[in-house]
Amino acid sequence: MYKNLRIVPHIVFGRGAFNQLDNILSGKRTDAGAHVVFLIDDIHESKPLIHRVPLHANDLVILVNVDHEPKTTYVDQLTEQIKAYSNRQPEAVVGIGGGSTMDLAKAISIMLNNPGTSADYQGWDLVKYPSVYSVCIPTLSGTGAEVSRTTVLTGPVRKLGINSDYTPFDQVIMDPDLLAGVPRNQWFFTGMDCYIHNAEALNGTFMNAFARAYAEKSLELCRDVYFHKVDEQEAEERLMIASYFGGLSIGYSQVGVCHALSYGLSYLLGVHHGVGNCIVFDQLEEYYGDFVQEFRKMMQVNQISLPQQVTAEVDEAGFEKMIDVALSLEPLWENALGTEWKSIMTREKARELYEKM
Ligand code: NAD
Ligand code: ZN
Image (tube, protein in one colour):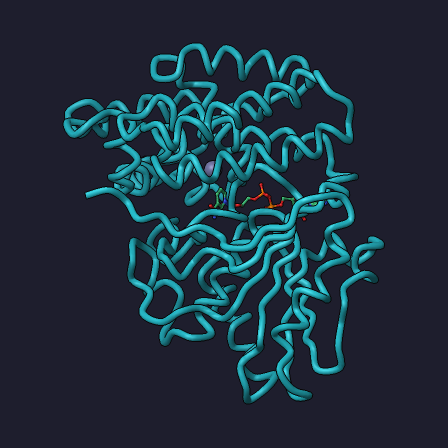
């Protein structure tokens, strides 16, 4: 059976598009008691963007901290805070920030309408009720979180997304102006997340014409950006679209070896997704040869160096945990290595790769 992919139904793209937010939300502000919740990456607290948020009388602004990538406990805590704020549901949840903030917004929109803890829904198609109307406004591009049907959370036992048809945003506003001022390393690591999405999709067994078209275009845009073929403004615009296309591509295919191992690394060591992917990808020449070489050239051109020996202090139990987390991601392995993946990616092989990082 073919996947029936749900994607974001409304998209605005262009410089200054942020200014349309109030107009977009106006349709949701049904009466005087209505309110909107804005979840904003706290990096913006001291930046001009915060003053442009179109606040109305009852709205709630929560500055979220993403020093650590989203945990189920943080999602649950923020959901409680929103429920305590008003005895009626918000008309909309708006996430403004990078992948972490976007994922928080998606998860909270789900949890406002679903009982229990967000950890109950980590997995595939476990969400019971539609989420609250949600909008995302990326201020960092690469993850594809703006379009994907997942929100990646670290829970009590594993790092795994809430993958469901209720996860995607209802509206995305992509304004390339908002990428100005992203620190150089972050710009690289989050952008490489996109590059690696495409490499893993194109090399996977789940590949098909739909996913290939988006991955190939996204790759071309990544090359324009990271080999500096275009100026800074054009690079912001292209990376934003590369991220979106990369997300669409993996939505209709899957990621692979790098993401599976990277999830294990993040779970145990708290390494952030973008940099974690880069650390892992650098060791995956036997799976993604030409892409790994091109990735290293991009690092060189952009004068990026990777953290070294991040697993040097990991003990026996730690390696076992990382391997457990990585090997539990079955669809990723099946995409990367085929249905017989278990005989290829043994625990020993995974350990060998982790030890090199
Ligand atoms: P992030 O959201 O974690 O942010 C990284 C850093 O950049 C933070 O310090 C943040 O404050 C800062 N930042 C954000 N916007 C900025 C701006 N305009 N200027 C300056 N600093 C800014 O980074 P990310 O790489 O975008 O997201 C990683 C997260 O996304 C991980 O939690 C990962 O699991 C998740 N992810 C989700 C999906 C999905 O489909 N849902 C896909 C890939 C990754
Ligand atoms: Zn990723």
